[in-house]
Length: 58
Image (cartoon, rainbow, N blue to C red):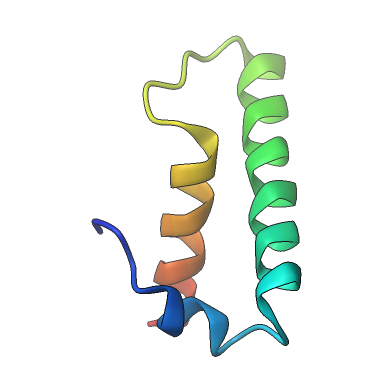
C-alpha cells in the first residue's frame, strides 16, 4: 500500500500525537527484531509500521 491516508489511520486513534507514538513504537520493534535476527531491512521501519497499521484497519 502506498501512502495510506492519514485520516484513515487517525480514525482508529484518539489523536495525532498518539498515532505518531504508536507508529514510532512499532517501528522500533520492527528495527530491533530485524537487528536481533540479523536481517537487512530495505524499507524504512516507519514505512513498514504505517503500512502494517493501515492493513489492520481494513
